[in-house]
Amino acid sequence: MYWNIGFAAADYAVLVPWWSQVVSGTSVQLYVGEALYKVGVAGQPAAWQDPAELSRHLTFDADYSQVRGNVFFSATQVAADPLGAMSKVVADHYPTRVRTP
Image (cartoon, rainbow, N blue to C red; front, top):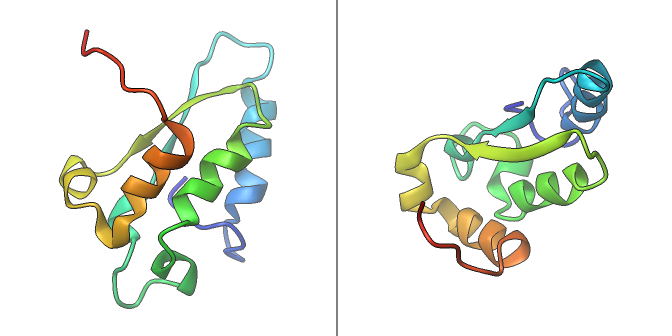
């Protein structure tokens, strides 16, 4: 779901509950795609100029047990950490490092 919270045409805060309901009671594992590649990009809505937008997504998702996790696109952007958005996500939601399998 590559849209921000409050985006009129496809509001993240509407889509997550909808997808959660769709997969509820099924064996589908719901992982939400996150648009890290939009953060800080000129021409994107104001929400994407705020490094806390993606962290708000994960906070929102925590109320939906069907959401098993999040996938951040792209790996290049994870490493680039635009506006410190990925660092904010890690600080807010992944406080403990894990060993690579």
